[in-house]
Amino acid sequence: MEKPLNDKDIFPDDEVLSHYLGKAKTAWDLFMVSLQEKHPDFDTEWRYYKDGKSWLFKITKKKKTICWVSVGDQMFRTTCYFSDKAEDMLKTSKLKPEYIEQFINGKKYGKIRGLTIEIKDPADLDMTNIMIEIKEKLK
Image (tube, rainbow, N blue to C red; front, top):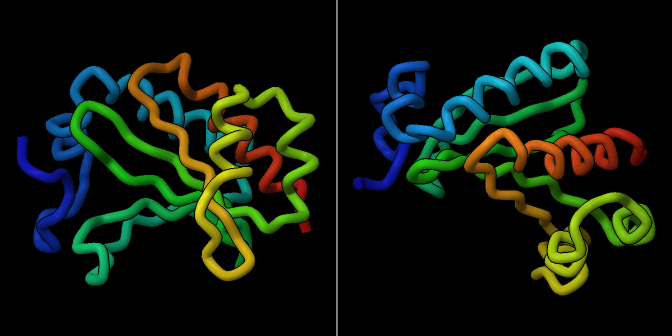
């Protein structure tokens, strides 16, 4: 399948998302409902980024970026960026060990490191919800 969401002229509406996500579209829909219910103060927007040549879904609270979402073939990824001060919170969280290790050993971008969770089915959303809760607690 072609690289998802790389055409700046094709907005990622529900039909386009269904095409790329396939079975993962159920998880996407649940993620959107969860965001609205648990975080009504979050803002969301799709934006095309020329540097990465793809559409990304950005989740913010006021001026703070909470999470980035990218769409892949039959899945989507949620990514949060944390500073070093989040390390203890992440270590003591209910995140799976592989995600904590991903952060600890992750590449630094200045003073931050990313944590990415791949979502293929609704059960994968638990880890994303924990990650977003941690991000929201940090100042």
